[in-house]
Image: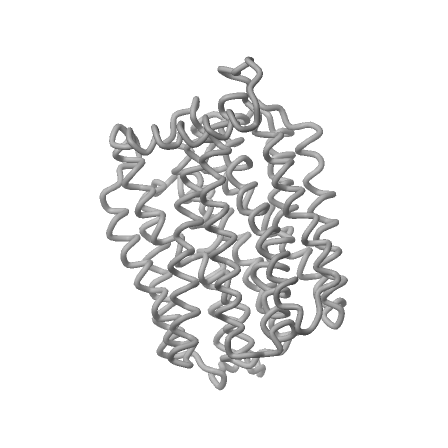
Length: 414
């Protein structure tokens, strides 16, 4: 593989943003928001899902529009820097969030999550800049492996700072900034079809929306890509819902303490790192599509197992120690969390034309973000109305089923 140094620099950004993904989205801030900011109110889950949906909806609109503008000027790196800063600065300001400051904390989360989620469009689109097509799956997997390594570092920080979460939020923003810096300094962006004429910000925004609208009208020309995006919409919705609510579920339904949550997420991150690396090779052997089928089927099995067999009193005795089922589930699920994400990104890279890579990754992110209008909202509403997070977990399975059925219509090559 050529450009190994470029791959390393690119993957280091995954290491950087994983601190935000784990500490803010999946683990500490999610629990801090529900338990402390919302004072453990029953409506906390709904507020959290509302914050997720608002940020995802705005990001969904920004992704393809900004992607089209970035392709016009070959400015992926500049857009990536803009949205990285939009994620980092509000994360640092979370240091000041405290009990009862629902609006303040929610606004900071919404802004930072818009920055984090939108930045991924430009980051993902760099894959085809740095390697040839035959390496897409391997490089995508390496990126996620670096990301989960970063997650482990984040969790290592979470243990000593568990009693001072605000300081942890501050440190998360700083680490995000430090480890993303090499990409902006040294990563090379391919320049193609650069639009030179000077135009105003308003004209660029109008261009972005027009380009997106034209692509939507002509999406039938890319029927295979369209079918994949629709399938992706449903199964990644389920994956995102698991990420957003796993910590809250463990805390409220299974009554995990903060140190137990930290151990759980360490297990998940290690397993996800291993899973991403395994499917870096297995994905090439089985084919990306077959590997995705396998992943979704196993995820369905995990959802059903949690619903029927896992509660706060379910333990196994291993070598004389009582181990909660949810720790074992975390290890198993983590393996297929890293792999389903890396495989999805690799297939998307393979199915999109290079000259419009950022724009199409904008649509990829649009389907990713808009899908979260359904999964987390469904989870939050089912949990709130029924009073049962176990029923909310079961509702996630329907999105996996729909995604699998729709994925059967996709071909691995155009």
